[in-house]
Image (cartoon, rainbow, N blue to C red):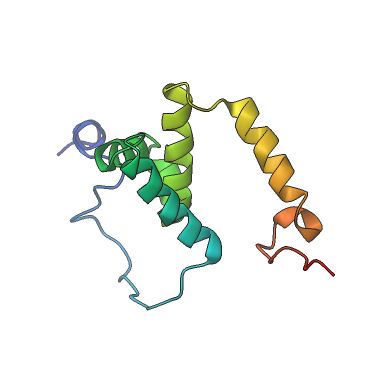
Length: 120
């Protein structure tokens, strides 16, 4: 298969048969934000806003470079946002406003994924 054929025929997450390092399979606890992401996927599906097929297509639409750089749940979040933007359910401005609002609840802007300060 030529490089062009490979680009056309392979989706970004279709890596079967390509040279790669061995996969290190380790059990790990999901981070709280990953659990929330998974719950969000369930809610979006339950309410028929984004289904599994749309999510899959949304992740594939990110392209090979983004798929290769983002973690599993980061891909989901970006795909959800793009789908919600396309459907007119959410705008980039609304998302940015909510992200700023949420960051204000965390010390240091929320970058550390630390729990919110306790009310004393």
